[in-house]
Length: 372
Image 1 (cartoon, helix red, strand yellow):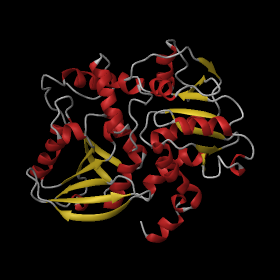
Image 2: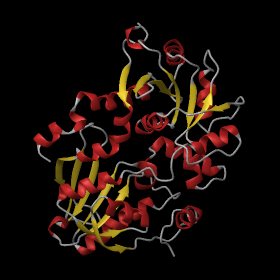
Image 3: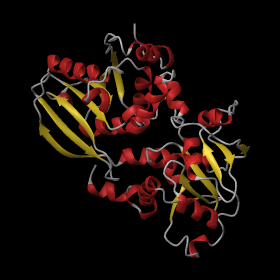
Image 4: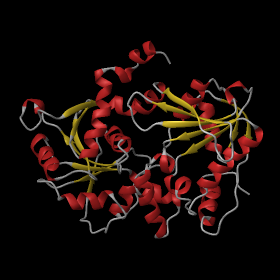
């Protein structure tokens, strides 16, 4: 992608750059205003403090709601809720409920001493509100309220950021469109001496994605390719809870044997929920949940990865037809939907180690991985 293309991309405009700032403010617990048909002032329940709650109380026209993903709301309410809804809204008292109660409502790994919440109709912008929490890799639980007219002219609202709801929802796809190569270097590996690392960065200057190239896969008609989401615990620490470490090293070794291949090392820890949330999911798994139910209990979908990133990396490398090293049919479908032609699925299976047996069984039974 040339510099002229980058400058014309929506992420380069002031309006869309607001998404970058909104993510930073969300992580700091600073409220932002969601620009939509009915504007909302909102802040993540995970990071909100007393000052954030005070600002919402002063600048809102109605009592605030706690917006939760349906899977999390069902646990808080201890009842079934409509799972097809983008969010469930829980009514909060005014002045607002205390910070610790909000954090406990958002995080199922904390001690759950919660009041009885009343559900109300979620605002139309609820999906965009939760999207901000997810982009910040926080728990998707947001304190939100309709913002009063003229809020920006009040001293309490003068420094608050406005972000368009539509930009938050479009951000993952637009982010992938700005991906570009920023560094390339030879890094001989134990399983593949003829290896290079190619670093990719998007316009938001966030976490870089890496391609591990063995030989010259870009010169092959149909190279072997593996999409590997980063796993700090498995790849770096050698955790036995998953099979990520063996999958990564096994892919590199196989490509070393074939003298070509590409591992796309994607900065999408925990199927896209981030490292901290993955550790929370582990806590819930230790209490009896499987990996899918643990993700949902935190308010995330079973798989939150953005496969447009992988497709953009392959496009930048000049690779459009591949043999995909995977057991996951969803990777096949998702990558094909992004325009990559998959000629063959190549199985990539490793035996259980005595610790990850139930994890692998869940992969097969609930995620549909082709193991056996």
